[in-house]
Image (cartoon, rainbow, N blue to C red; front, side, top):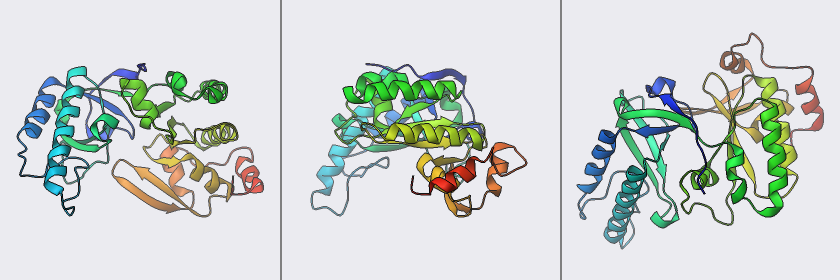
Length: 285
């Protein structure tokens, strides 16, 4: 089945306006350039993009040829179907170029293909599909809980998207899922109190039937924090360090001062004793 992506009519933009886990669609000329670059890779040269085998292995040349063929086939399918790529970590040393990723499905070795295109090669932007789109992919025993979670996120006005294996399979219909696949959610939130409420809903879902639920709370300033880590950090009174991810990398940050900048507030995020309640509940939730 195919999941409907959200916001796919957004105009193209520079790297300054891209977000983690955002999707981009390329112009035909950008696809032509990528396909030409990979078609010109000779069997004697290791290709430059993605997880293309280890040159230290005894059969490295054969592995490189197989990897190059997988990458070319995958890129060709993506171009033919006008499927999107995902925004990757940006390289400050490459101004005007946008770093993108293509996690290939099982038929092409589950390779992570790293790509770069000129900013002008992006036709439009969008987001992964909403949680409801992956419902048919879930085990039967998880579907009722997933419906409740999707409804709770809508009630909290959180435009969640499903990325990772579930998101890509919903989007393309290709073979991404395996027995141990997690569900990954990107969760745009406006402030810390809303993030707390979302994290509580996610924790409640995790008390039920697998699969495991991962994902990131996406703050307005562009920073993202894994929801479980956010919950532990808030339970500890924001005194410890938390891993904050951005488009240009990630760093451990101590204290809550960064949060005011991210959310555009003058405070560090407490709300009606929410942080105190989490502290009482313990950091191991």
